[in-house]
Length: 128
Image 1: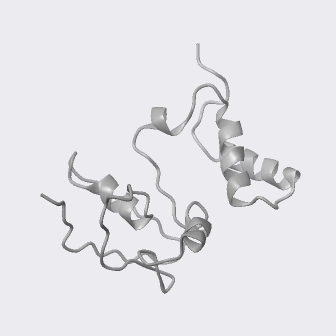
Image 2: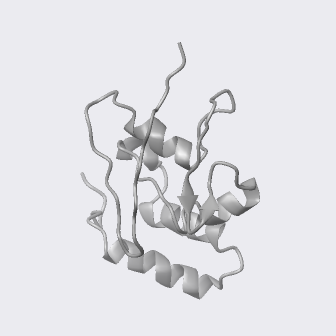
């Protein structure tokens, strides 16, 4: 039996953020993953999702990659699966910045990396 969403309507103005909350199993993650087209190829996604006038559902994959992480992001529920404990959080944030801005100079990427760490609640030293 296919899983169906009837209607999800959000209007997010520039500078605003949205938090999707609900009971376990209610479809929060599946809904967000479908907007970003991060579900497996076997998933069927329909309807429309407009971002600055562009339809995310029918968008060219190259254009969607430009938007993901730069304009729209998903913060996953379990930080243990979001970060690899073998590498520092700073290195992992730096890698994400480099992937989204491959032509950015190293000094600028490091500055953005420090800014992310300074504005977060991540511990500055390893525990233990």
